[in-house]
Image 1 (tube, helix red, strand yellow):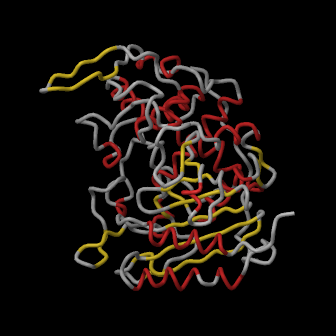
Image 2 (spheres, rainbow, N blue to C red):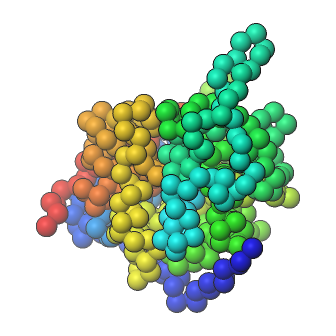
Image 3 (cartoon, one colour):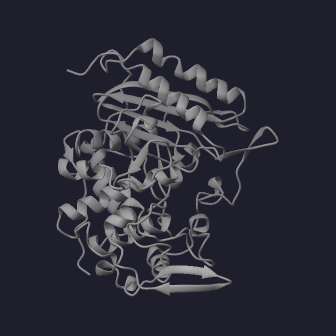
Length: 408
């Protein structure tokens, strides 16, 4: 396998510390933004979340950046702006960007069959029926493609028994996991339905490894994190940064308690010791400021702080709705682009997001979005196993309501 050179970027590309928020420069209402902290503090005091970090940028200017509540409730460690979070499925668009980078380099095409890059997928079958314990299979009308994986329309289902806890235990290599996924039958004909597929995104990660000659985590580190100055974003969290990790909390009997070993990634404060699986679908640790750099790059059509990661055409392709009239997405009024959820009709605008807004959430309540019409980037970070919609939607609505100055 031909290996790509590892591209190292000197320290001059690391970003400086975040500037002081300047709502006026961003064309936003400072008084409205000041409402965010007290509202989130109310959720903390009611025991619904331990704490939160929130960030809003507009036109590239930082308008709001605030930490609320506790990083660790029991230890009374205050939440900090540089607290590190497990962002879980917010990882998926990073995997998507990596695929687009390889496409731009001519190493793959989005319409390529997956089996063209991973031969183990040749001969994959689709389930026709399951009755009385008898499963009927046949050849699908066509093999799955990279685009199918990126839009969650491939038909690849959850991991099979025996490896089904891989997102918790993380005890297999990506190559081992994808070999097993390749032997599972599809749940439906490719392209005919939308079904959120963690295994499909994992397969994208394996394609990145095969086509680049790097491990998945090495590709992200050298090709995305370093160029954008994302110094606190990692697949595997370095030991010196572990004290900054926010635990995940569950609500039990009306009280916040630390989640245990049965959640995605395992027990958070064991830091995935010994993990082999790089989790292209769910692995990243990050901070609000780091994530803002990635989202601002997308808002700027692939470029930020003098570093271009994607061509404008690639950003446009990723953020168009590709799922047509299929029922798709996790939120009302959305469809799916290429690893991004995209607001497509008025039902998705009730929190103030514009048509064309794209973003992604994570299993522990995290969420980030880009609104091209408003030229706005938002980041919402919590660590909870409870539904995050009440506090998340409150933040999104308040942030959008702060937009005052029209764009030129």
